[in-house]
Image 1 (cartoon, rainbow, N blue to C red):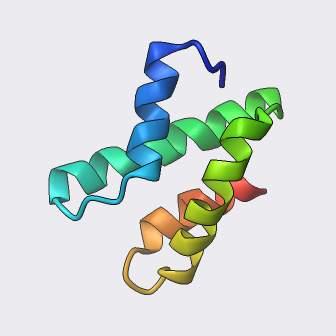
Image 2: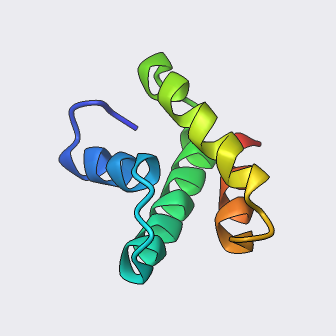
Length: 79
């Protein structure tokens, strides 16, 4: 969850961007899982990331009928 980490930036980009391609959607689910695990381990989310992530994760919860796996991981990120 460090802002200067290249891998973290890519994970963050997969979460924020909502492409509909199946391969991208699969990577997005994996990125949400990574974020959920990282947040559970550290419990620290920089404010700059939190303000961008929260609306995206809430939208994922609203779309639970369309994408239940995404909603599940979004909920794990918000807990």
